[in-house]
Image (cartoon, rainbow, N blue to C red; front, side, top):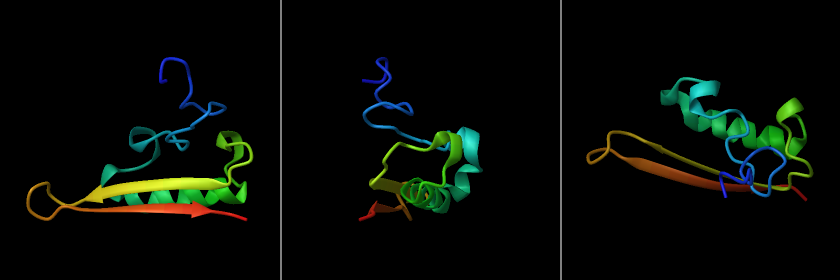
Length: 80
């Protein structure tokens, strides 16, 4: 799936359309930027990294110290 380009822009299931944590922002602030990217994709405002006809976006983030204060959230966003 990865080697065949299915998760790249233009693939069946684009992932990390903003470039991922190493390309986008500090990893400690990743969560809100995932939501911002999803909204931009849904609005058609992502420019060169726009997913064609984006109608649904899945955002998942985790935080805290593993084993003591760990948390996670998953959002499914869509447009009509």
